Every structure is written in structure tokens, then in C-alpha cells.
Image 1 (cartoon, rainbow, N blue to C red):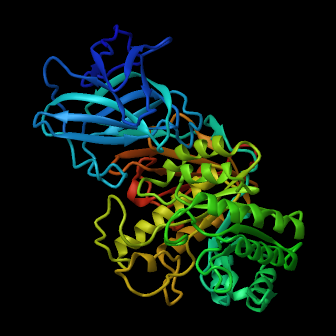
Image 2 (image 1 turned 90 degrees about the vertical axis):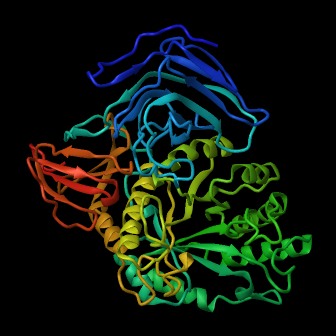
Image 3 (image 1 turned 135 degrees about the horizontal axis):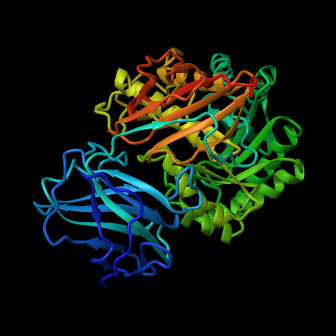
Length: 567
């Protein structure tokens, strides 16, 4: 269907190319003029597939080397979005992007800038391999289901332009308009935890406390606690005492099978009942202590629920264990799910079978930038309703091999370790910005000294307990956040740029970062800046009151002394 023309908003530069709304067609959906602006692409994914709005110019369009596509978009988080560009060689490139962001959690209208020449999109580069070759013969906006589900809806778009360059110099004012912080998100420390392997290691606990973590997450293995229905907590009590001495708490994972009760997974009713008795014994033992609980770990993958995941089996376990814990400790907080990634289909089956707790726990690992977790969260919130919390109980990045870096699978390289530091800070800022009450970094210490094994390179410190750059970066952020509250995120910054405002008696701090690989962003400093440091707390070189804001260099922190005294 061909659309009627509409007016483009904004002012074009002489080198920008305005893409008229007239002439777009639909593939896998239908197009219509928007009620107030632009165009609307309607989709029906009851049988899967995708829907694309396509524009084919009368003549191929020349683009500059650093060209970008700019558009305004409004979309529901149930769909994933991508720009689709076909060049003169009939090579098609996909550029994923999101309508829902940290600053735009409701999916309202927002401006997107897609860098066509970027060497990396930040999404793993599986769909994208450099800029278009020569002229563009068509471009489109594609929607597909975020998760396997039958959904119907629409996206709206407007003001499509091809820019000569997306590079930007932008300003940040001390009192810029904010998207307010979520309720209960004022402080970082209470939500900030770290995963611990081994529960008898005071060196790790000292390092965790110094890094600003307020609790640890650790396995409380069923087979280690119970034998012949007698429960022993000697090792766990040593950890609990060590945590008490440091003013820290614990998130116990009640997990894994028992040789006396079904082996790898308790499936039979008597084995499930035995697990519930173990859970009740744990809760009774630690009643009134600084503890939380999580039922199992990643039951939605076959590694932890062999031979294959089964939501109804997991729900049966949760149905028995959650009330057993509450019987022993009515004030206990218990999470179910413990999902590897945002596996909403698995958790929907779990909830339908009665497997809910006080919270839904997820492990938001991803190849995409950490900030894209903002688009997953609304769908989980819709699924669980308003009364359950959402916990991030495991998420980290190894110093091994990540997008836009040619690390080459070696967790000990300087490049890999710097990349981990950048992503660690961005992950921490993301979960804080999202207001998640529990946010656990994975993990405290490398699980070995093999640089070629990605699983052994997730630690903030190495196998010999030496700081990795990520540890320095996390300590720096925790120190800046310690006596400050999160006020909100600055609105109306260039696409991909985030600025979190932290207020405290010692002055205001902005944490500012860029999540767009290869973007050339320059930050003009606000009046009143008294310090500008990098993610390690080292002073930045300021030239003409400006600093470059590079994705690969991670967050910068600006300290401001405001007129009228501290705020």
C-alpha cells in the first residue's frame, strides 16, 4: 500500500537527504498514514514472520562514507526492530535498534540515529558487515517478535533522513531535564551484589566489601547440607559469620540434585517434598538474618536441568519450596525463575503451573549492549504483574571476547580486560537506572588461570587475587555513588548517549557514557565542573572545555559544584 505524503518535522542541513513518507510499501504487514504524524506499519505475528516498511527511490541514493539513517520511531517492546539497507551490489545489511531505552521506558516517540558506516553495531555483528557499498537502492524498517509469541500490533515512524554524518557535539547542563529515577532506586549499594564461588574465602569477601558490594550470591548445595534428613550448616555458617562481621548479606541459591532424592533433578513427589524440607530447614536456620533465597539456578537450560528443561517440573519444585520457606520465615524473600537470559516462554509456563515467588529472577547475559536490557524488562513486568519484584541475580562479562573488539579469545589481554571494565560499569549503571532491587555481578574471582577459557575469565580479580581493570572501575563507581542518590537520566541527548545524575552533599556528579560503537561524540562540559575523570578515576584531559565520549573508553564522571552550596 502506498502512503500519502506528510510533512517532515525539523530542519534539514544542506547535505541531508529527506526520505518522503510517500512511496513506502509494506512486506508482511500493512501501511497507513498515522493519525497525528508519519506512517503506521501494522503487523500480525500469530504465525511468526516479520513485517517491513520499505522505501525504494526512483534512482539509487548516493551516501557519504560516514552516512547515517535518522528517524523517529514509536513501538511496543514486544517487537525487535532493525533498519534494512540494500546497496548497489544488492547486499542487504541489517542494523538492529531499540525503541525502548533507559530514558524512554514506555516506548514513546524517540529519535534513532543508525550509523551505516560503523564497523560494529554492538549486536554481535552477525547481520552487519560494514557500510553499504556505494548507492542505496532501498531501505526499510523491520519488526519481528522479540520472543516466540503470537502478537499483533503496530509501529509508527516519521521524519526519515539520510545524514551525511552522525557525529555530534552536545552540551550537558547542570539542571538538564530528567527522566526521574524509578521508585526505590536512590542508592546503588543496597542492590549491588557479587557472585561467589566457594564459601570459605575471606580474601574474596574483603575484596567484595572494598568494591562496594553489600551482599554475595552463593550456592547452598542440597547435597552438602542434608544427609538422611539431617541438616548441617557448618560451612555455610562460617560464611554467614564472615559476612555479618563485614556488614554484608547473602543470596542463597537453593540448588542442584541430591543422590538420595532423585539424582540430578528431583522429579518424583517424594523427592520434591524432600527438597521442600531442605528449603524449610535452611529458612528456619537463617530466620531473621540478612538473607534472600533463589530456587535453583537456570532451570531453563539442559546443563542445570538435565536432560532437558521442563517448566512444569520446575514449577512443581517451586510450588513446594516457596511456601515451605515462608512457613519457616514469613519475612523471607524468595525468587523463582533464575532464568538464563529473558526466557519469557519458559517463565510463562512456570507461572501458569503455580511456580511464582516473591520475585522473578533473570540472568540478562547478551551479546548486545547492556543498555538493551531496558527493552526486555517491560515484557517480563507484564507477564508477572505489579506485585512481584524483578531481580538480576547473575550477569557479567568475561575479559575474553566481545563485540567491536578484536580480542581473539584471550582473557588475559589488555584489550580484553579493558573491554570487561567498560562493560562492567555500563552494566552496573544500567541495572541501577532500571531500578532493579537486586543486581549481582558475575563473578568475584576468575575460576582459573586459562586465558583461552571464557568461563574462567569473568572475575573482577584474577586467579591470584590481583585486581583486573574491571575491579578498579567498579570500585571507582561505588565510591562516587556511596554518598549520592540517583536523581534521574538526562533527556534529549544524542542517540546512544546516557547521563545519570547523582546528587549528594559533596556536589553533583554526572556519569556519562556512549553505547554506540564507532560514534564520534564530543561532550561540551557544563558550567561548574570541578573534576572530570575516566572510569578508573583518573583525570581526563579537557581541551577547549570539551572531551571526546568514546564507546570503547567507557563512562566518564563529571563533578560539579553548584551555586548556592552543595546539592
